[in-house]
Image (cartoon, rainbow, N blue to C red):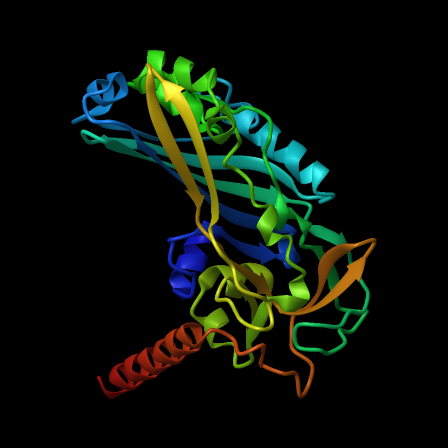
Length: 352
């Protein structure tokens, strides 16, 4: 799997944010994304009120994983693929999802005067048609030009999708559930309360799709850039080595907050409503974004019609800059540690 390659590199950001990670292989015109959407909602209410009696002591949890392709109508994955493809089209990306794995998690923990709700969706789509054309020059990333005879223009607009169409999935022991809106988790666990919230001033907070990755539309020129010029990462990955023919790997990272990319804050919202005769205060939080894109080959950035794309070659041009924008120190340390571990392993094998 492509994403297994991403994990093998061990440079992905920690999943404490709305994440968007991806591995792109222009040489095969394929990619794998990893979109993680999270929304936290806290409800505060008077102890002993009807909503307190409903939620106090509750430990509700719904979790399942489904996978499939465009023909998977039994579990609803075909609906998810259609919704993602529509979102890609709206983002003006030529990429097309062919199959997908989705993990849905909904948790509610209730106390006498408050309840915490967490919704998390992990979507791992396999995509094709990421290559726009087979030639061209670009600038950015390493601030170098790519050879037009050996370069490929690769779309990057898929990173900023917002899925607005409903996604109805079906899982064992759960039945059917629409996953994009928090209200549907409550409808499964506390149907009467869900109806009251739907008809109240809290409705907007609970009826907005959490599959919103619009914050990743940040211009690619502000993302941190790093590439492995030695080919060590390629040599450590059988997928890149055998399938791409590339000798370097380009990495773009967003979410560390800096003068270059700006400071990212969680998106927060507050609302108040009367539920069952009691005043309920609601606070929602969507974590700050954190993203990483790995591309097989050396990439430089360009723009056309307001969209971002990368021009990719199998090798880096002579004198190419290895990193821009103070690339996250933890990534550099991990890469250094990996190279050291590989060197020790080789020495150990040589002495045996």
